[in-house]
Image 1 (tube, rainbow, N blue to C red):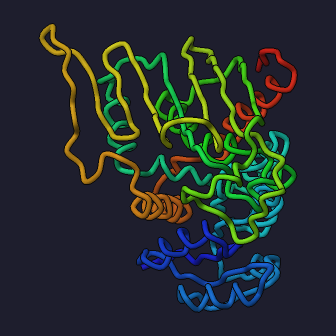
Image 2 (image 1 turned 30 degrees about the horizontal axis):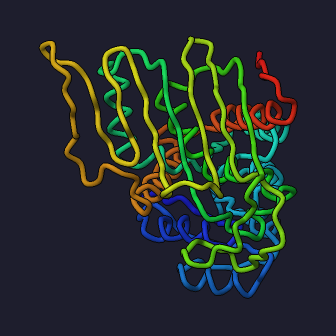
Image 3 (image 1 turned 180 degrees about the vertical axis):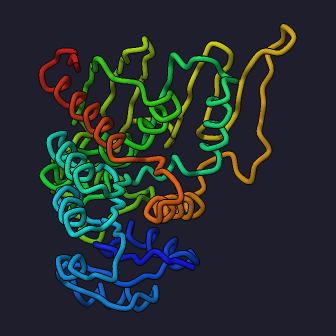
Length: 353
């Protein structure tokens, strides 16, 4: 049986999820791990059974026995490594966002198309069974035309610090880190409509909330309470060519009573909440009816989601399936994100052609 030979660039926390899924996939041979910290690369390679470790990802990309790579580096290097990998003849799974800027994202798309390579974006929540079940209802017309959606991901007590808090590296704050997930879910479920205008706001009123010590939160290893250059909160109204609209908000720091994630879509024949749990609402026999699909979990399943994402990438790389998160989807999401920041900076709605 043909196996898909894989290398992973970056050996940090998100890479662990990719590596776990690769190691558990019978269609995959895990060949190499590259990280600027060679000791970490070697330790991770040994942990997951990879054959080799490199300090320089260029050496990994030069390896002829690698078919595809996962790019699990900081946001500011996504574009450079994706382009280098494509030009080295590799298929690419790049973590979200595909790039920090629209120009970088468009260049990745152009080079991918010129070289006929699979470039998949790490929109892992698309692959979770609850999302795929809802997508099957929508694609079958059960909800009718989707004309409105709401995407929200709110956290209360500050960003993770490190590169997440550095705008030059991350490109932005909660909008590019967590807001992108819920925005993408709604846009994907809506059928990936063309955006025509964006009105957005960003706020940096609360900072990273380093003074709050009574609640647990995720902090990176190099967390520094005195360093933070990203927004606390972003919100937006996004309008599409088909007349549909999407309402988005996301935060790292907000005086809310709880952390929350809410993803909902509404159509002419029915509506649905995907998160925090899948519920579908419709009408039958002149009555309002709520439907709860009987699946293993009605919320996002982290390990299952990554396993299915990796399987889709492998199948696409082997020519057995189409990627459900292709490069152009990553480009369009970055187009929306960049427009939100532009609108927030200018105080004006941004029209997109």
